[in-house]
Image (cartoon, rainbow over all chains, first blue to last red; front, side, top):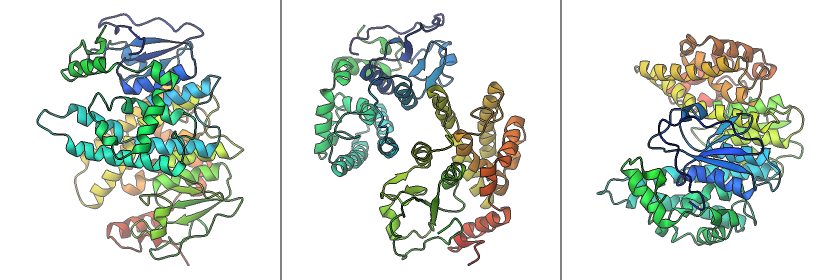
Length: 241
Length: 243
């Protein structure tokens, strides 16, 4: 994924040491869309960070001390503070670090971004269901549901008359939803955007963003990872390394 | 308009714009989600008007305020609409001066949001218990599951060694949790707190809070509402109002 070629922490590995001052650490996995949200924000805000990739098919014991749910992403700072849940990590980074604010200052505009986030919330589980469907399921029902969700997002862009979901510049909400749109092509779900032209334009505009393009995952790698992951292979998370 | 107004029935005409200097909340007297927003309005001393919605018989115009007709919804004098109870509560904390309910520190703010994630099964489980009991069904499994959630929250209080979930003073996260705990007694499941002493202490401390107190729902009125609601009586939402 991008330039991250860090292998996962091996099973039985010792816990990592404290985070050096001046850096923040993210526990991640190169192909995880939720972790990609956090990486996008780190990149967009130019925050100095280190990455420890976790093998989600063979999690080291110590990782459950970082997040009792054992999920990525997790942030750890040099004060030993731990933050998890991808959206919470992103908001934390925006508040704790200087530079370009990704969330608007205006309370109503900020609330609007959160309302759009809620509107998007059915997309990740639908994509997961599609990916995990058995070979004999044809997925057309799921595609229909996805089209419905995409229509809601198209309406937002239509009503706002802006290129991005938060206005005319890219902002937090765009980064939060991007990882699933990045994966549509590899998953052969692009047809679900056939009737949502503004969404298609938005996707093209997103690919031009420096943070997005720096973290773009190569299609073959994503496919290779997915095939192994769906077979529960402990090698999946290091695919391509 | 006020919190004790009869709910707007179907066929009623839409309300006018919100007067400057006020914010409006579309609510329902017994809804726990709307209760969150009313707690924040009260805690911050925000001048507001309440329009209650009859959730079994929603006026057509209400769908222009929320696409699925849910409550709570905030509407300000600029005609801006905000919904989802948690989003509405955060909006009020951001938009209005005075006492901040969320902490200033980014980590402490994140911590409150992580705590809220821990709570997510409680509304579903309490409601399922209520429905099961009211319909004369077994709910031992549901109560067990709810007790487990309460154990998780108990652990947090134990680990933090604080009275409230955000520290030694009441803050946003406590108000976001409170409505479901207030309802345990009236739903008939107060015994789910039997094994969680810190959580019981927390509910006692919450009942001392002036904001919580001011909005405490009268037990008999709540029971009266629940009785009518479960009989599918359309007048349930008016129960206890003297006009």
